[in-house]
Length: 107
Image 1 (cartoon, rainbow, N blue to C red):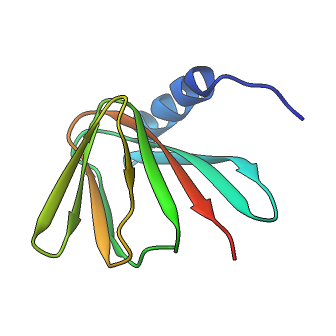
Image 2 (spheres, rainbow, N blue to C red):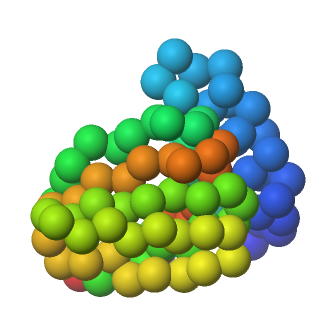
Image 3 (cartoon, helix red, strand yellow):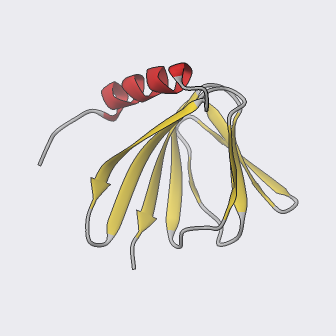
């Protein structure tokens, strides 16, 4: 098992996001039979377009702040907070430069 700190990997991802014309960068930090974890860096104002929930999933904001929109609801997730991802279409917008950890349960 490779050891890493999310902060050090996150710093690299945020720098890559700042250099990307898309304003985002991601790295899968764990992929197993039942669980996948992806570190996603977003620059302020970057939006992940509306998409369907991947099933059981959570979003942990490690730094900055993001807002998830689901229909008529908005869920702000500041640094240090963890939220369930609702089982419906949603998008994600970075309120500030942000680093989030997406955890998805696999089949």
